[in-house]
Length: 267
Image 1: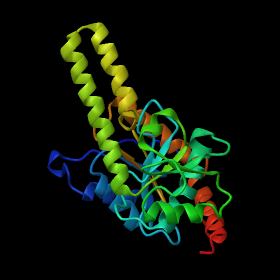
Image 2 (image 1 turned 45 degrees about the horizontal axis):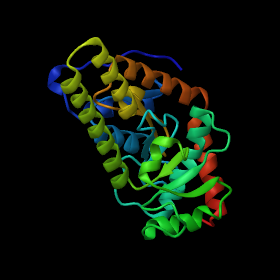
Image 3 (image 1 turned 30 degrees about the vertical axis):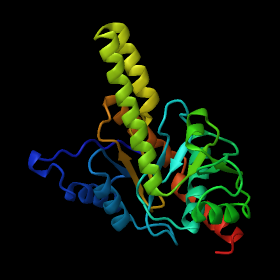
Image 4 (image 1 turned 90 degrees about the vertical axis):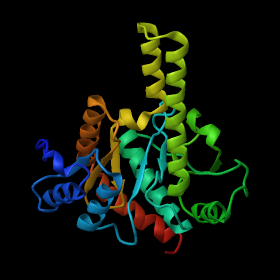
């Protein structure tokens, strides 16, 4: 894979979804291996979904990645793409996340859990219960439910939820991080020690911004969807992620995993 450079547009194009369509079109034509966007998440997803197409049986791609630095290898899927999700879709997310954890984070046998209101078996809504039944019939390392307060302690490698719940958890985490940073600034003042502590808290609570972005899962092409507040380090990390996805053949591996897991649940 080659880093072809940046696409720069006049300021009048700011927020214009055609920018994402243009970038995805370059990939579709074979002139680039993938595209990275730090702009509109919705526009990036729409462009990648329409121009690349989705894996067989996948209606829409999903966003997944770590959200807290306390658990930098714990992937949460979905972070906002699919707000209404069916059990079969969560099983697809499990298959996609399983390969992502293996390829990107080098986890041998990823622990897969469903985000719920209790860790005990049988706790949760119908989506959680039905998904649990399906996952129990696969050879994935399904460990049951996980509660939100367990996320920072790396209790699971792939955490499943619908996009509504995932996005709420993501934004709450980011908001808490910002609030703690402001509290430190207020209590300790603006000095070197305070700034070091603020940066540390930001990295622990806003991993997605530092991570830069992650691949849109379930589409037939590489689209790295970035965080709008990413700094230079975050963007660099997003580029490295893109290169790694291509070099490890992540997309093809995920297609194979989807086919295998679906056979196990008779889909």
